[in-house]
Image 1: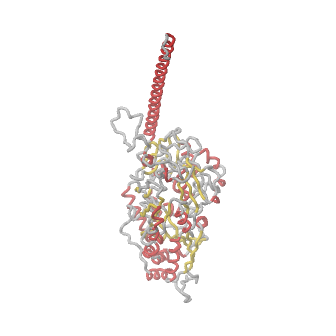
Image 2: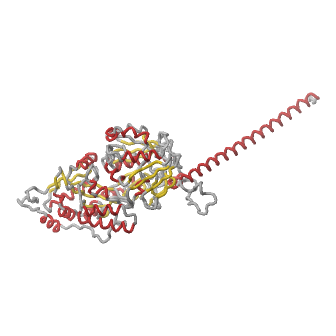
Image 3: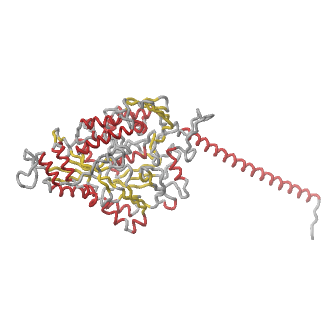
Amino acid sequence: MQKRFITRDWLLYSILIILIALLLLVMYQVDRQWTKLAQMESALTQQAQDMRSLRTAVSSGQVNLSSAVNSATPTKQLAIPGVGAAFQRAYAASKKPDYAQGDWGVSALETSLKTLTPLVSTDAYASQVQYYVQESLVNRNPDTMEWEGLIAKSWQISPDGLTITFQMRDDVTFSDGVKLTAKDVVFTYNFVMNEAIAAPAERSVYGQITSVEAKGDYEVVFKFKEPYFQSFGLAGGLAIMPAHFYEPYMNKPQEFNQSKGLLLGSGPYRLADPKTWTPDQGSVELVRNERYWGDVQPAFNRMLWKVIQNESARLTTYRNGEIDSYEAKPSEYAKLKTDQQIIDKSQNFEYMPPVVGYGYIAWNQQKDGKPTRFADKRVRQAMTYLTDMQRIVKDIYLDHAEQAISPFNPRSKQHDPSLQLWVFNLEKAQSLLKEAGFADKNGDGILEDQAGQPFEFKMVYFQGNKSRERTVLFLKDIYARAGIKLEPSPQEFPVMQEALKKRDFDAITMGWSSGIETDIYQMFHSSQIKDDGDNFISYHNPELDKLIDEARRTVDEPKRMILWQQAERIMYEDQPYTFLIREQSLLFVDKRIQNLQMSKLGLNYGSLPMENYVPAPLQKYQK
């Protein structure tokens, strides 16, 4: 039987309707509150981003708060507003569709490192690792080659060029969380100039500076004793050492000099423990600096360098995907370009770096306190005539190199284009050697000097470099044709460094890096013979010294280039080194590594650590 609604039922029904309506109203209000909260959160986030952008703009010199209002001078606009000049390229990379953080960057070192400690380390590999850890006030833009602020936000140079004042960012910390201030810059300079610290090469360079003073926490003033053409780069490029970390070693310099892994800085990466790295670990591993202050964070969680001295082992390791890149030797390059496994996994780059260094043979002019046969200019010239660079370029480097004529890049304004390349000339070499008193007096095919001592010597080279080994063996045969006995002496790099320090060698073949404008003071000025300086061949030419000194204090570029060219002509005549080749880079990089680009400084792989990344689907290393 059907039931009828009574008064009580209508009352209950009305209450239920009211409750449902109230519930819907509450839900609507809650939804409005969540929407309002989301809007507020978005606004706060945007405000924080705007504040960060403003802070970055001020720090980078884009905006000057004291003069931004009613200023008639337009401010310099960055390509990406709100991102510091030094981070523009990395920021652009981070906005690519496939960009992802994570994974490891893994490379190989051709030799073991003796130490990672700044100043006492002397090889390029240690400098590469330090570059990821320590930073400077300014660096060069790889596209424009102009200086741009990093830790410095602005600077002023006095009219006479003797005083440079930097205003520093106030938001930079070292990887241990301690603030970086002007005190650290002052400390770094004083530490370098401490005679008890084993850094003679650095002291020779920074000797141009008379003082570094802090004006408050975030302003530092460099003063120079005389004009110097690289004064800005010298001051701004000083790798800043944290005072609180290194200061204790001021009173115990021997402990610092003998240390292996004292490395701490403000850069995007850090040692997991800044004091405990040792060479016997067989690798160098850096971890991401979680406190990094920059506008862009590095993509890779870790950077790992494995020591793999054998070339074949390095190639095998690359094939197996255990390292990310392989720099091929000319002798194997053509074959590798047709190797399907290599091609399938690689991006291939073949280029002459704009700031490529040069290989050389250094002739030691003094050993055990006595002049050697190479102290005679005629002997050095003869050795250069005998060193057939054209065949070395063609037969050993397979035309993936060019002959060097001096320390100066042939495309630079420092180079005198009227100088002709040295060409192999056996007859001219023999004539010079005869003039210098060498002759085969006993008919054994070996030249002897006037005292009857045979012309024989050892040539030291790095045992892990096959191209250098082939060069030395080639020279052994060609020198023999002139009656000179060359004994190849392959050595590990730390042993070579010790030989240079003690001046305990006859001849050595190595390489120097180059810059945009090369300062040759460190290698060829006679003042750098003493105190383990880099003039390890004891070369002394007063006229060259005078030209180097004058060129370094000449700020006017056209006048300075004339002086450098005069200096080049002296070195061309004196041949303190036999300048060999400038080598192309023949590089294979794993396809998982993205955003590889060429700049005026060369390929951005390795040198600009925050520009490369691995898309998430291609990542293979966990944190």
